[in-house]
Length: 534
Ligand SMILES: Cc1cc2nc3c(=O)[nH]c(=O)nc-3n(C[C@H](O)[C@H](O)[C@H](O)COP(=O)(O)OP(=O)(O)OC[C@H]3O[C@@H](n4cnc5c(N)ncnc54)[C@H](O)[C@@H]3O)c2cc1C
Image 1 (cartoon, rainbow, N blue to C red):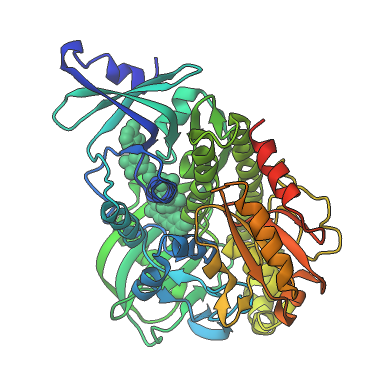
Image 2 (tube, helix red, strand yellow):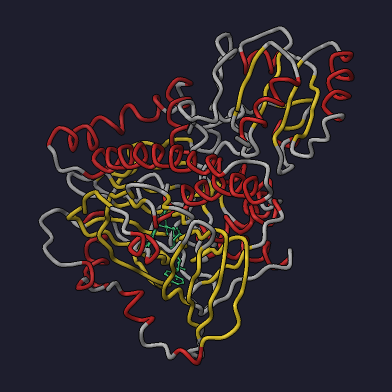
């Protein structure tokens, strides 16, 4: 008997009351659950979201918000607020033996690749609040202090038992259930899905505090060390920093046994300069796991976020990846629930996001090795070579064009997906399965035209008559699933796609390319949509 079933058995039968029916039950209102719910609002899907906590997290936890997340926030109308509330990472300073050895300009690393060419520092607590406020503005809420105690599923539905704060139990029925219930995921356990991987022996620490030292509060301060990691991230507020570090491999204490005094001592030793750490708002110690689930779904139940993958914090990928999981799943569930697609489309959620999770674990493990390994060669490169070459490397376009898409998650693609139709994409720089490239049209981001929760059919041509004929044909199909745009070809578009004659792009609702071709015909759009229903 698992934990869930065990607790369920203690709830007396007579306290079970009203049934609730909904399309989707979301378990967990962390950033993943809240972002998924935000997408359901866009698609008009009914959901019930529960969380055993009292409200959104008061802790800063995840800090780095990447470009792809801001593109998703933009569709919810939240990107501007996020940028205003956060701080753009302007530069990084590499410190060795207490001295600044090099500075890297981070402010515009992704110039020309997205409307958000930087990393934004915005605490998880503020992200959760933004998303939660969005739900409330749209008449939705979270059932706080409500815990999932058990669930079962049949071919037709999922039935769940939840326990509220006053001890009463409720039965909920939903067409689907999504477990966004964090790394220990009771949903994952109950589904019996494997969570294979490994645990790093190092103990990590994290603290938000004020620091008095001679360094300006204008940069991410990275201490280069032989065998550990220590980074100070500037937060909004006078001299406020997020401190993230690891104890060396030889440190033998368990995560729960570490005292704050030991963390401060470790910081003092490693930074090798005079500093006073005070007004500590919170701190935490933890061991990092690198694991992913064997399958993102089982029957009518899905997993998203930390419930499906956990990894080192290097690269600040955790929260961003959870938000993208939800973004990938929401439109597919919406199509199925609205009868516009067969349920087989839901298999592509696992196909696309499992592949991404595997790749994510490999890259974050590798990044951690480079950042903190005690291997003598890596340690030598990190402490002696990196400060010399990093400032030059960060100015090189090929380096920027590799690093930024990787970290910002705009480089994620689904070329191998069943939803990506390669036919016709041969002459193009971007392929079916790629994220829609960013460029500006008449001074505005192309993404401004892609806010509607629909497929987007984009015709790029300099012959307006093409547009009128195609639009009339498409309108006659009465497809409220497709948003149609005609865009004049210009040099930026030719540069972005690598083709200078008329072409069309059919985008999925999450702005990934379903197909791209110089053959422009509504028949292909019709066929693509028809295939979804069979
Ligand atoms: C100390 C710390 C520092 C971190 N730093 C970073 C960082 O710098 N960068 C980064 O990207 N990531 C960081 N992370 C990871 C990041 O916080 C996670 O990736 C992110 O929170 C995942 O969001 P989630 O919504 O998937 O899961 P969670 O945030 O864990 O949310 C899961 C929710 O499910 C609820 N829940 C669980 N079981 C039940 C149940 N039975 N019934 C009802 N509700 C339930 C929980 O109460 C919780 O609210 C950090 C995490 C920690 C703990």
